[in-house]
Image 1 (tube, rainbow, N blue to C red):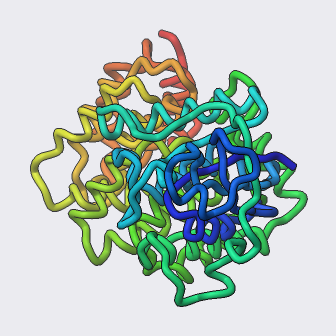
Image 2: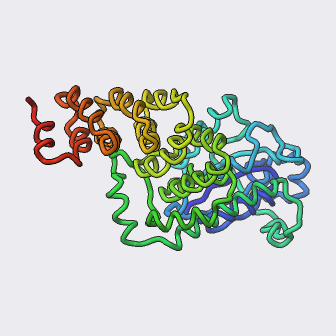
Image 3: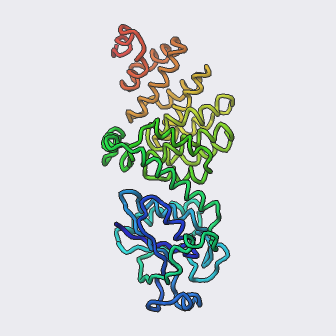
Length: 392
């Protein structure tokens, strides 16, 4: 078990919030980083001891990472407020993350910097090693469990989002398959230096993930965003499947959200199961397709894959021009996942307009990557495949 300490304003709400997450084993309210040993609440309340109301969080890093805990914590605070959260004011209500193991610094710093970039301004959140922690009085422990209608500076919406987020992960874990937990990391290349490096799997099949997505299709975008930031692959997939449901009701909002959160769409299945049905579908009735070319020019491979795979829906509507233009732009892609994606889309065009594909291949077959070419001609008769694969 590992331990981290969070100060997020009144410790009643922060404890109740953090205790909901799958993988959190134990929480305890207390007073941290002050000058007085073993202070009472009354002493801390004066703001003269330097203590901050804090929550000790014991967690299982096999179930939830420190990075995820930190990201969830930031969802519960306004990181720009100095010595205040909600209606609570004073130095005891300042915000902070404190660690006892120096090896935790890197994970905290990484999340901290990601959040800072969102605001583009300094954060009013302390981050440093824990100096001291004293458990609060018994009546401060699990206060909101004992007093469900008690005061909490966190909004009901924030608490509801935390509850739903936790429920979704628990439901996914119920469908975990031990064999899949072993197979999926190898299948999605999660080893060091591979394209899915660091990705983690609960071991849930896509059909079962779809069931959970349908069950929670009405959750807020805040919950979807939190899931997209998860280290667990199935959580991110579930988020995208829920977003497809959102897209059907509010397409503009869903597409904006999708494009703002491509960082979490970081494996080929996440792209392929979402891009055509959100961005691709959205563009079928629009003439402005500049976003596809913007994504195609990205340094991020997954965004480039989003660009070309989104055109699957355009192809199904008989609109081939963007696929062919993007195929030329991405023709010399070095990664086989991009070569396969471009070849796949060319093949889809060829199913509907073979002459268009043949014309493209005659122009490019001698210098296009072999993997891309093989995918593009997969449905051709054998003799035609031999012709296009020849180097003459």
